[in-house]
Image (cartoon, rainbow, N blue to C red; front, side, top):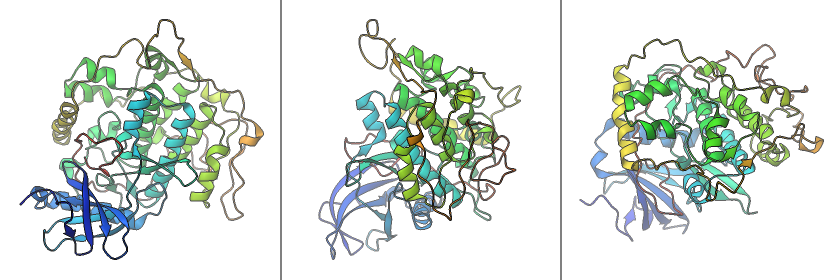
Length: 456
């Protein structure tokens, strides 16, 4: 039997296949039309040759459960699911997205402006706050899993894709030790490499920090390591210790000057210790907004409209904290990193991801563009203080009070938590980490302007 559904096929008794959008290692996505309503939609169906895998079927079902639990304009809407009686294929029916993956946009733009970076990551963080509250950690955030669409007014909107690799942080969920670490090496947190039980919401926050560097500079933070040494054991031993070289130093070699406060923000967001990171995804992106000099008002309307009961913290002058000099953190106290069986399992998966992508291109002196010798590096300046108009719109009477003060203290209590809860050393997530769901981190090439809807 063919792995592809032919154009015109009636699927699940109520959808007519229009075309195959794309396919990946786990399934294929088709554009289809509902026979009764005429609504265009996207159908994600598992491939025939993996239907027999119990682990992959469970991963597929997880995507349906995620969609059922969480309502957010920044998560792709799934409105039907089932098993086609004729083919036996499990399937999901999703909204048909018009736009492109953020990775495709980045490749074309070379890098994003600070305003674009903050907008894309803050919308992603709004979705993550919702999923984390529901006890779900994405675990595979990357530009390819963020889809850029537009609202009716033309403003950008991010859709977070592929919760099939997500980890349900719920009591009683089944263990899947072989695949608990899987993700994308450029954005994987140290605890994911080590397969630790500390994998949780903070792991997604780490990925936000790594994506911020990628968006602003055009190259992942760990690209030099993977370009210099393709040995996965060597790379993992470096990555588990967390970033050591200041982000601004790496960016300067790419012809980009980051804000003075970015190093401190990046150090906290990508700390090797999950407890030292921001307690919420939106706390990280709102701090990034201030570092980049982006008025909070530009995101506040979105934040209030989507999460009216959880307003973001107020942003005032953070120069005293975020302009502090970069001081590399000590990594976990590991004299010799002992690779566990779980880590050995992911090395092959990471290797497949990288080899399928092909070798990383050599980094020229000016990655951002031509003529670096005559064109000065782009400088992202941080204003000493945001104007009063940049404050987040006032929340409703039932909303939690906003934080006040003259600085954003990276070790201060989170405004959304109790008065005694501290960011540093706090643990994030409503439930203890229990399980993981299998994943395949590899990705196939994707046609421009279309999405695999998380096909990896």
